[in-house]
Length: 338
Image (cartoon, rainbow, N blue to C red; front, side):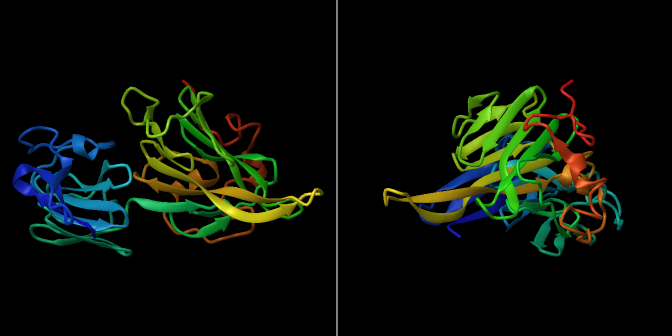
């Protein structure tokens, strides 16, 4: 609440005013001097362009904008400032019961967002879209929330590595480790990513390595010429990984802290970390598999089954085991380096 964001329609920009300093700055739009055009997705908001933006609404770190003359609804992630199209296209009459990116919205202006969906006022109608950009959690315990809603458990075997998400150019594997010595149960302790011919490894007790070299903090590393795949480290505890369909946040948090007394009567504090992972899906037509990825294709909320994803995942939990953090030879792996 320290700043106000509004649409500067005639200048085709989104502007932000600081209440404390009284200064104003552009946070989106302005790729071209006079604006009035349309720019593609998966780019920084400041490198994008609008055509007479009117309605602006901030909801849960997402900034929703009605790009009126382009007949679209755009959404900006305020964590990465990446822009996407959430709905709309060319102008046409009102239709219902279709995907948001397929519906055509004529001259959208006002917008309101809550947990039930997105309400858009256009020239002749009030539209309602479902929240296309779904955010799911993968806790280190782990409990998976599917992209279609519903939570299910995947309790991996300690010391085993599983395929979590797999597409043609990307694979994410995770190693399950013991909660604590002498205790049952497991959680995610390490993550490995394959992106084209590149590798990313993130470990429970610190360290992120890209192609076996430490990742530089606040330096965005790109994996492809179009800059659609990249990773950034905000500190040694939090990372963001951008893909064309997904944005993945990985945050290292303290799972437990306890004091150990040695035989020399010395006391030392032991901290056990795990990963909290947030995944945002931007597109409906993501061809993916893996323990989490395959739920992108489900249209209805999942109904939790057993402790190993029974009734939700294809096959059995053991089918998703791979030999290493950077292995892609699992049964359901879609990844190919070519």
